[in-house]
Amino acid sequence: MTDHPEPAPTRADRRRATRARILDSARALFAERGFERTTVRAVAAAAGVDPALVMQHFGTKRELFAEAVQATTPPPAGSDPDALVDQLLTSLDIKLGGLPDGTLASLRSMLTDPDAADHARRALGGQIDSLAAALPSADDAELRAALVVTAMVGITIGHQLLALPALQDAPADRIAAILRPAFKCLTQEAT
Amino acid sequence: MTDHPEPAPTRADRRRATRARILDSARALFAERGFERTTVRAVAAAAGVDPALVMQHFGTKRELFAEAVQATTPPPAGSDPDALVDQLLTSLDIKLGGLPDGTLASLRSMLTDPDAADHARRALGGQIDSLAAALPSADDAELRAALVVTAMVGITIGHQLLALPALQDAPADRIAAILRPAFKCLTQEAT
DNA sequence: TCCTTCACTCAACAGGCGTTGAGTGAGTGG
DNA sequence: CCACTCACTCAACGCCTGTTGAGTGAAGGA
Image (cartoon, rainbow over all chains, first blue to last red; front, side):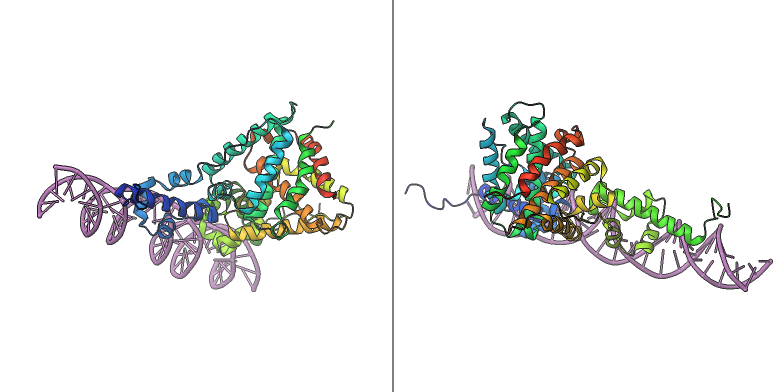
C-alpha cells in the first residue's frame, strides 16, 4: 500500500482531467449534431466549464474538433482477403453496437465540413488501401475494395446516424450473415 | 406563326422566372455546401437578387430548403427483383454522372439537419419498401432491401460527395458490372 | 506565512446570420 | 395620360456565434 489509492490530485492532474472532460463532451456533441450545429458554449456547458476555458485548452473550435475525431481505429492489416472481410464484418458488430464518438463525429460532419471531409477521405482511403492490398492482385482490386468500404459506410450511416427502421430492429449477426456472401462476390473477380 | 417566339413576358412571368432562378441557385448551393453553410445572402447573390426577395418568395430558409429538395425521383416500381436491381444499377449511371441538385442537397444535409434527415428517411424508406415488395417474400426481405439501398447510398456518397479517388476514376459501367453479382447475392436468400 | 503561479471565470467585442418593414420605380389597366 | 399595382431593393433590427483580455481566488513552493 505504498501507492495510496488517491494520491491527492495535483493541479496539473485536475487540469488534465477537465481537459479530458471537455474533449469527451465535445466528442459526444460533435457525434450527435455535427460540427456546425455544435457550439463552443454548448460543449463548455456540458463539461460544466466556461467557454473561454475551452479556447484556452484547444485554441480554436476547429482544433477542438480535430482532436476530437483523432485516433480513429487504424485500418486492419492482414493478408487473407476473406479473413479481412470477416474482420470488417465482426467489426460491424461493434459498428452497429456503437462506434466510438470520435468516429461518429467524423462520419456525421464529413458531408458538410471540408476539414471533416478531408479526415474521412484519409481514413477511408487507408481502409481501402489495406483491403485492396489483401485482395488477389487485379487491376480493379482498389475499386472493389473501395466499393466494399463505401457500402459499409452507407450501411453504418443508415443504421447509426439515420436510424432507418428497417435496419434498426435487425440483429447484428443476421446483418453480418446476409452481408458476408455479398462481400465475397464483391472481392473476388469474375469476368 | 400565330404564336410569337417571345410573347412579351408579363410581370407574373418575370416573377416566376426569378423565383425559379432563386430556387436553382438554392439547390446548387445546398447541394454543394449543405443547409447550415448555405446562407440566404449567398443564394440571393447567386441569383442576382436582394436577400429580402428570397424571404418574400419562400418565407423562411427552411421552406426554401424544403422546396429545393422536393420532387425527388419516385421509387421505381416493378415486380421482377432482378430487373429492379438492374434498374438501380442503370440509375447508377445517372447517379455517378450527376444526381439532380435537389437529391444531392438532401444527401449532403441529412446527417446534420434534422429536417433533411426526415426527408431522407422518407425517401430511402420508400425505395426500400418498393424494392422489398419485389423480393421473394421472405421475412428478411425488407432487411435485404435496406442493405442494398444503404450500400448504394454509401457508394454514391463516396463517389459524388467525398470524391474518393478510388471511385472517382472508374467508369460507371465497370462499377455496375462489379456491383451486379454482389447485389444479386444480397437479394436472394440463402440459409 | 507570504508571495507567486495558474486554472479558471467574467464581461465584452466584432462579425455574420435570418428576418422585417418601409420605400421605389417600372409595368399595367382604364 | 394617369393612377395604381407590385416585383423588387434598402437599411436596419436582434440574436447568436467564435474569440479575447482582464480579473480572481485557491494551490504550492520558499
